[in-house]
Length: 115
Image 1 (cartoon, rainbow, N blue to C red):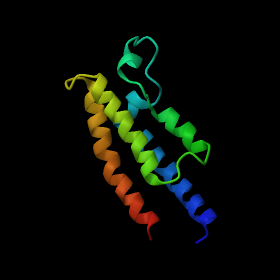
Image 2 (cartoon, helix red, strand yellow):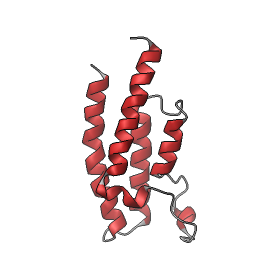
Image 3 (cartoon, helix red, strand yellow):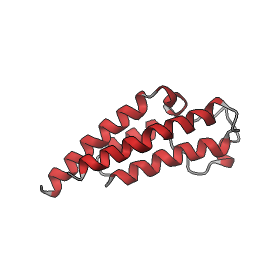
Image 4 (cartoon, rainbow, N blue to C red):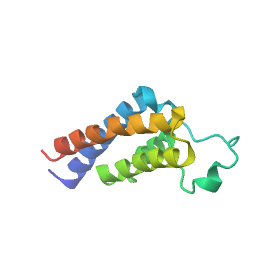
């Protein structure tokens, strides 16, 4: 398969992956950036990531060169959430559950892309 065909296949797979992650019931805290009303967030988190940013990066078609690039952003999003929030919060728990969902899904997509 040509690199153009591989890129189209990758982009199609990444769009489907992101749709599934975004639709997950624990994705709700990550749909948009943390609001400015959380005034100390950027003092703690220096590289914020949310699903709307990932979607924007994906729509450009050139930001994510491989599955691992998107997985890195998803992991950073969850890591940021766990760093900022206490373990007993709904946000921390959502990050844990969402990551438990997307890690094996990412591996399934990796296997599909390697066929």
